[in-house]
Image 1 (cartoon, rainbow, N blue to C red):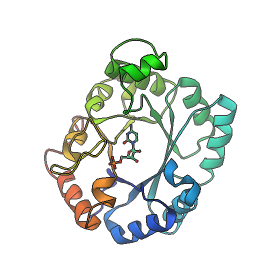
Image 2 (image 1 turned 90 degrees about the vertical axis):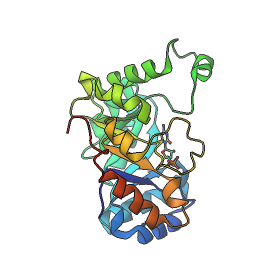
Image 3 (image 1 turned 45 degrees about the vertical axis):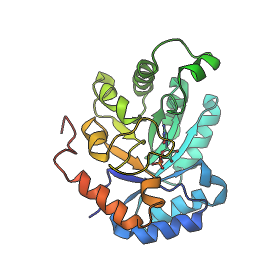
Image 4 (image 1 turned 30 degrees about the vertical axis):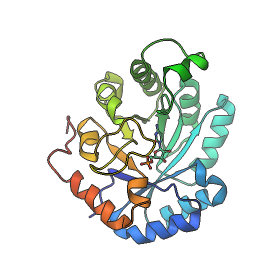
Length: 236
Ligand code: C5P
């Protein structure tokens, strides 16, 4: 049984392999994330095909950042594909410009990339302070600027969910690992059930599904976990 709380990140090299993965997963998975890695190898065409011909929901993970006029033009072009989610950086001017042009596509804001630590932020001259607190502050500012939701690690989801600005907004968490699967380069991880219990509306899972020896079985196990009583959102 499919459950659109599970978004499978299609970080395979090209659109043909993405299509093969979607065909293999069939009705089990209804929501896919397509990212920058596939942009130059058919990613947008694949997004369109999965949406129009296979009835899938699509999250286009572009993490856009530019001056307002360019963001508006880029988002207007993407909105013609009528996809479901699109990421932009959480700076208020970027979110605001994206919302002017997004049509039915929901705009999700990226706060601080989870690969960056305090030393990286110092090097980039980003204001001092605790990284988790900056993430929550940036989430609040992006939501106030009109973002439909934010991307957050499972560790930050609860603090963002508690913000008044987050009422009725989406929290989408990558960094999710079913118990027993390899963490890969993800540092701050949680299980699917724990991420939902922390306040996530959707979890993004990549390698534990697409790189698994049996992707269908891997997806089935995650979907079963999402049905467990532990996978209940706090305010639902
Ligand atoms: O394979 P894995 O489950 O780690 O994939 C997670 C996906 O979520 C990847 O596509 C990665 O680019 C994306 N992502 C992330 N952390 C963020 C934002 C996006 O892992 N902060």
